Structures are given as C-alpha cells and as structure tokens.
Length: 205
Figure 1: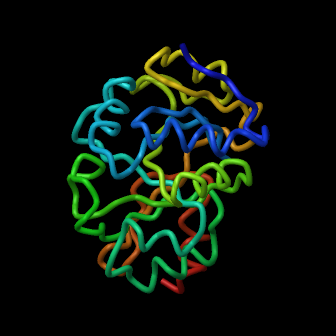
Figure 2: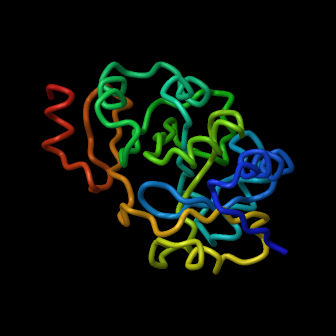
C-alpha cells in the first residue's frame, strides 16, 4: 500500500529518508513536473525505478541535489562552465551533464556523464537533504506518457511506490533544459524553460 503525505508535513523528510534508505521509491513534486526518486547509491532501487516506469535501460537517470556543493557527491572533474551555469540557474529548471564520479553506480548512468540539477522547490530540497543530498529522480510517468503535474497523475505508477509526497500542482509544467558541458563547452541536449541564448549569456560562450 502506498502512503500519502503533504510534502510540507513536518514528518515528510524523515519518512522519505526511511523509505529511500530501505530501497523504496518516493514520488515528489519539483519545480517542473512530479518525479519518482530512488537512492542513487542502491543499484537494486534504481533497477526498481526503471521497472516501474518501463524506462529503457540505456536512458540514464538524472540526479537531483539539495545544495550546490552536493554535486561533488556524484561528479568529478567538473568543468568551469558547469560551475558558471550552476551559479546562474540553480536552483531552477536546468540539468547539467557533467563527468560522473567513478563510485556512482553504472545503472544510474552508463555514460561517462551524469545529469544533475537543483530543483527550485524548498520542500523537495528538504526531502533530498534528509536523504543525504542527492537522489536519482526522473519524471513520475510511464516512459513516453505525458509528464505528471499533480500527485494524482503520478500515482498511476501504483503500489511499487512506497510514498507519495503531495505538493499540489507543479508550477513549471515543463521538463528542465538539459545541457552537456563535459568537454567544457556548451551543448543543448534537450530544449526547455532556459533557452540557449540565456545559457550562452551566462557562460560567455
């Protein structure tokens, strides 16, 4: 049975951390769309996330961070352009692909990079912070289906999800912009709320 809690419930961070530590899945709001989260360090939890979404295994799972310094948990050799983008747009709807740390499980990303961002949502960042600063999170929908903007829409994923944190309707409604800066230059992988002109202005490229 899936538990429901308002994300601003004082018990929410501790309950989410309990589920995540046990290898369970949590649905939570972000500033863009609802996401489904797993412990980034537990391959079995990540495998369960792939399964519940029916997500192709060759598609990497992004990582949501609580604070800027948490990027060092999952990435290494971070290019200067990534630091510039983080200063300019985090928290916010920008996912930055950076060289991944070798200790990150390959099931999170089989690529040499990992996508990371900080959501502009205080409640979600409190949850991530309680779970250690980083969570593997992707949209809480079946692969190829519309992105969920409410907890009710996300609940279609069913009982494999242990906990749903309800934060009302997501304000953004559009997935984040994704950029790859692993070679210290800017490549837009997925257009989104932050356009290329804004990105290049922030980096001077």
